Length: 439
Length: 174
Figure: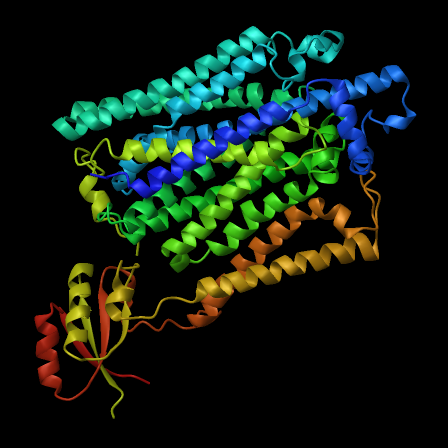
């Protein structure tokens, strides 16, 4: 049995409180009227001009505008500034929720494949998926707030969308009520399967009944199929519709790859932490090695999807597609866009290539932290260009949201670890997993 | 020091594996083991060092990667710039994404082919090389362990018989 160390508990509470305060500050200080924005613009005229140059679309420097244009421009800038705390909230909420959802997917994959090596890690994975419930509640609050026009995150929800023929054609899918219902169904499905898989796993410990094993296998297979479909539409709804004119068929796989590698990284980090504390004596270096192999493999998988999506649209250079990559590749997001390729692909590729490095815990932790930072930046650059525009920064709202969700994440998963024995003794493959040895 | 070896033949891979372990424990020197298929764990039992082919593979991959960078620069930028899809043809950096597939392919190509060639050279498997296995039956279903003859021949033969050898032969090793 794991006992939640009070140090870690205090740490998670400090993160949550700091984060909540910072988020409150972010919402409180967001500009209310166009006059506030005007003031902001004048106080940072130079940086604004640079941003306006980089925008490249319909935006011009304020000086050249007629008063009507100026008003529309200010309105736009106001919406972007008001979006900032929401955007920060959404980035962190989505990042941590998807980590735990993809851990559930990874867990279901182990069941569906009847894998032998990973049984010793099952309780760690189950604990990480415990975050799905609080995570989805918080994310649903965001969805509600967006649907009720508390923010301007989704352009296609605004009244101006009625004048846009492209958005009108897409409105059979992109309409607020359908979007909300779908969002609810996705989250409900993830929570249901998490609940049933965890319940079965605990029941299997108590009875060792092979019937429970078989039913868990069936639920896992059904979940994987449902997730594959839901993840596709979830990425369209929540992320791709931030840029509603742009589309990419690879997008969902790209998001999935990014989050799956983050999820596996979190499994590895939590496992190494618990093992160092002596709670997982049955986990050997071969299990760590295999987790690191997955981190390595899925980093390359991510890079593959990233490049596939990018290269075709870069090469074709069609205006409606290039508009998505312009702020990222050539605009103000360039350092994030290029930097994340280095963090998410080049570093793990070189660090985790060697077999002995994959067995060294601190190496895996280092690579894991780099990967998590990189994929957080990835989610940031997926969302921010459409919501806060070119004047992005990483200030109090962003750091506070990250702190709050990280604190909550740590608290929930380590609290869940105390709820059941870390040794899933009911699983018939337990022995195979314990003696697992990679030559 | 004689160059004589005893060739002990076995007809089962598990028996062979145990024989290899026992022979090494008895301080005899195993020259070579001939098997018709890879026997799992045999390299460890024989005490062979881990392969270094992964390192050569990495080096070859790096060579291929830089070769691709140089090759595309020479072909597409320096020697014969072409207007493809309106992309600027005078700047390597602005054309780089188009060259990534070639970098990838040549990295894999160099790593794979040079690694195979290295493996053949290291195993002395070049064209017209004659087979070096002592008995043609080792390509079918028998296993031969070559132990260098050291000391009392009779004692060694008895020992090898005891490990499960079905046939013993003393041969001169060139």
